Image 1 (cartoon, helix red, strand yellow):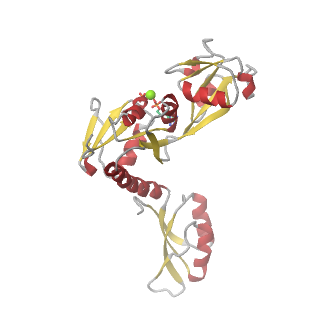
Image 2: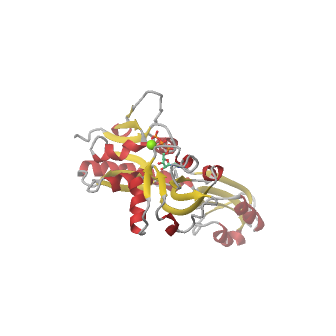
Image 3: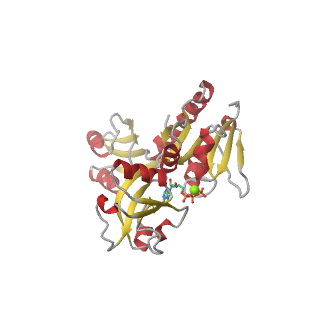
Length: 292
Ligand code: ATP
Ligand code: MG
């Protein structure tokens, strides 16, 4: 299929969609999702966004219905294990939609060690990933596939335990479940085909250049402050990445200077307190949109 228009599959609505759209809009795509729009066209890089269920994204990319996709690593992994010989690859980790796939058992069930899962029934939406983990760890358990409300399975005596996505752990707690083992740590990933041609690979690289400049800028801040000339050297202990700051003369004073610096790590309230403790004043912390 021609790659004149780049096709990228995104989750239409759910826990991946907001982060995907925010990231791509920072890359200038201007995506405005609407209820019944399954195709959003952008002039930027001549792109068509296919707005679909997250479960369908790996299959769309693998079968060439889409060129790229943004999906949870857990969804990619499940598809890859279910479809050995697939053509998919992870192009980049995107640093949002962090969660983990974990085994959890009811409090008081006595299931704590991995071996305790032997002979038990486990409900999950990720049967292939769970089966792979159990096989590798020589655990013999029965797997029941559920497409939602997995956390209710032990309550209604459908399963002894569950294997489900966890972020804060609040849902597990509400349902009297204890997380015992993490099977997979997940975040949103950009996927593509290993066998993609050069034209498409070049487009993916262009997209990755944009995405990386947005991700790099995410935690970076541009900091401006006034400080005694003698204290400029102390700044690098407080601001990571401040090896060679821009130092500017301040009109009307000989001992104070203005310093401009990009800090690559988050600037928190304790960072400001430390800056003040070495005599910094007029401190401005400005977000950076892109870093190229
Ligand atoms: P769809 O209707 O598209 O099939 P869904 O209900 O299957 O949606 P969501 O609950 O929106 O899926 O989750 C999509 C993905 O978001 C998950 O596969 C996982 O990668 C990630 N995810 C799940 N829960 C969280 C969470 N609490 N925080 C962040 N990311 C999460
Ligand atoms: Mg889904």
